[in-house]
Length: 226
Image (cartoon, rainbow, N blue to C red):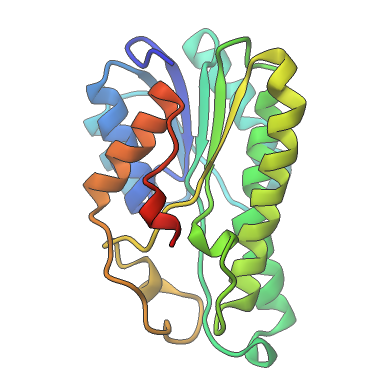
């Protein structure tokens, strides 16, 4: 995909990864529409991205998530790429995770991204793309994060099926299984302390890799999946 002039929706733009992607894509000449749940952070990202259109969104508002792509297409005159970078973690043995917490993990990590991308599919034409950040945990379940990993795995399975559905339309679907990053994400978990984690990958390195996937279709570095 040619990013210069591409019309891009980023959902989760107030997070570390989403904000960094927004700034990087602006630097590549993309026209952005942004959505996030922290108003002040969103305003800061918007200011760095040529005062692009922005909207507040709550992951529990699945209808609102579903409608974001249509809103972005209206503001940008169409849509070429939709990227979701929303997520929240929780740590600890499975029996210590409450049902309310489990529901929250599934809503934020799986249902909300699915709703965003589902609402975008009919708006993307040949050569368009949709992408979601899942994480290596989607393919490598880890003790101490069973519900978090299950939610990410659900999103990953959904993306794999949708990728096959969209192939005939020539719309690319990207499952971005990023490794542990130096963003402090694990320290902002709903509950619990993270288990021993591998050495983090620099955020800038991950952002460059994501952009390479979108531009060229090449996979993420294989060592990140180990």
